[in-house]
Image (tube, rainbow over all chains, first blue to last red; front, side, top):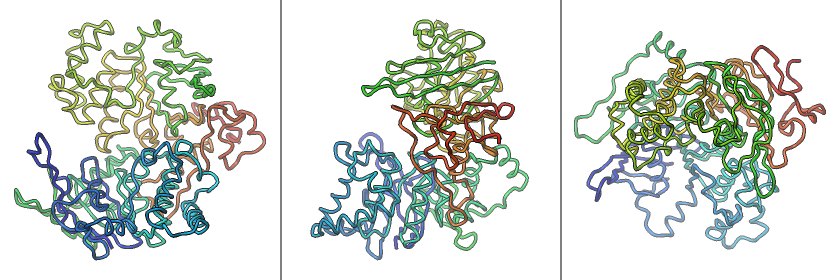
Length: 303
Length: 317
């Protein structure tokens, strides 16, 4: 469905854009219908830039992004972009800044109606809204006709997902959507993503939190400095991390029932097998992957 | 006993009335104890941290006492609090990264801070360098501006700064929340090291991340809607919680290794009560699966096991 092929993004930095910074380096990945792919990385790993490029908010410097056979980077004109956004939508980190505080929160639904469904009748529209609000497991009486400050972060975030569902959406880019939420409401949003996945929606789940990425996703992509360090089925990546960086990352995650010392001791007792990492020549910007086991890839080691 | 807080009540004044942000909080903090203070947003954990060092203009002390090393902390008296601040009680604020003055070099900023507190900078200069090295920073950072440091470095600078005068109590408010996991681990570990070396006597570590608390804290206190729900040794709170809120909160945390296909975790239905007019009785009763009539009475915080306190009618039976 969504396919990224050798995507690069180079930002100009410094005074007068003299320097360059490669934020995304040779990333190729696929999101299939009904699949959740987690993009996991620390700050500066390029995960949000990838999400932005898929949403067409910024253009890749090199490489192609295709959605159902069409090159997203070559969309020209308002009409083509509007059609694209009918199928691909994003939800972002801070639900409070996604709403205009002087309007009621359900204005986001009205805006979808005026731009995408101008001909629909009031009754049919109301039924549609009630349907999507029910899908995100919110009580319409509690959330409709309210101002953003009257709703909780979890409710607002679910309203934004409901807004995306009003359209004929096939891919959702979820950029850190639960980082701002409390632990008790976080899990509701995650479970909702799992429900949507069962309805055939493809989800690109961008996160810095490994345990959250692990909970919902089918496949995980661990990014480091813009390049893929490791990519594979979530279970394999977490049970058998092959890249030294993924191992380091996993050993630093605070776990609920094991202390860091226990994790370190276990790692020292059974040192993992080393795999041959791919290498590139100096000055080469590509980032090749090596298939270590079926569907499980490791990338280059960047210093 | 380093710190003893008894029935502390702090309200925020608003146009619509008082917000009962802290409503009868009592706990003890022993020498050398690192206490993790956990809870959802709006439960009063930051307010508690602030109340121990400085009440801002909107905060009103309604009742209760704070004792530090046997002497009462005059929390309502700005002037009497001043000698205590930084010397005895120190704080790492929530956005420590933006707590540094962008127009001053780090070294100059620290010197200004020391002079403002009546300490000659030359007296602690060697110690400052030693501690910077201890947390893995080159003493050269003193000649740099905050913008030249990464987030983790800034966090460590603030940590060294806050503990320079060996305070009895350090309040770290979400000190590692904005950091990446690997930086988070090293900062958290240096905090434990500071305690082990006696740079701080005891520490309150405010965070919303319970799994992080488990890594570094000796005890955990869970707050809900301005009150203490449960306090106990970290391993007891994580592995054998007694309060229904703690149980549900820990049950809602995904771990590395858990996936939706195996077992779905459940969130806690409902939202915390508003604290403008807090409900009577147990504040968790609306969301609690085992609530019954007796929960209309406020449950007292009782010691159900040695060092393990919980405020629920249903515990210990």
